[in-house]
Length: 364
Image (tube, rainbow, N blue to C red; front, top):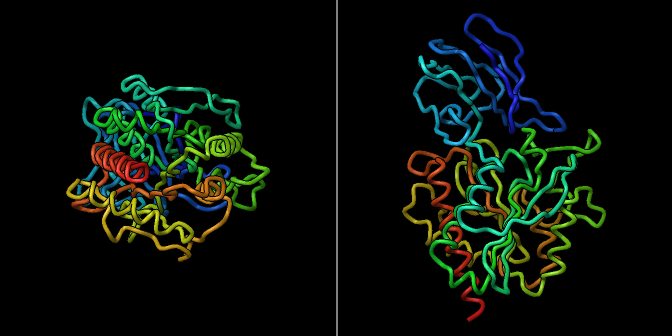
């Protein structure tokens, strides 16, 4: 039997084994705060019942781990009594020679590349990562106006990339007229190295002391090339940019973190509220939705205006932007409003329809 993280997005460390219990830790790597992302593969465990234990550390949500046989299709274990917030027990079937387990549903660059081919996105070199990997932007449409979509400023936050895919699919399939007016410019993997290497990304530090991850780097002397390129793009196209939307995942679970909510700003609160109203209407009745109450107020707790974040620099560089906010999409949700690959795409489609409605209203 082999337990490993030798693949894109892998993250695990085996501490010890006691009988049928394997004690694990996720790797924080360059993080200076604790975070919860893990992803590992078990090979050759057919017929065994094993318990995977994180020694009391909160690493799981309400339905145990996300599971996959091929690292593409994901589902929740979702068996009562089989998991806690820090451990889970799994019985491997006789044919289950390779099983992937993850804290949440994964989304890797290969999937977005396949989307680009399927719906005809324009894929262009955009930036180089810290490790000199080529990063890409993806454009849908030919209109003179533009909406910028980003995700994975924090590498582990995969739900946001599903939202972008859903928005792209909706507009490509159902609103070609809009795309003649307004293009969608997406950079879905800002922390590209972190996504591929399986880092947390959230709480990353450059000096081992202060947090300086990709969403704390929108400054005049930005460290990351991707952040510099985003700001250059905003400056060059500010006359035509209508919206700047940054897609994230929140804390692991509990309270507002079990919803899809917008992180509001006080400087353009009224403009963002118009978008939120559309999004609520477009997602109503879906298996995962954004509701009227799913807003985190400005200047409350951790949500402070200012700081070197994507939405802050967007408002600064594109002062006439119609909307600029972070959408936080939960890892798990709750019964009746549950995260799956399918429900994330449907919510993303509603996001795409909302973009089209708000931009159209502004150009009438």
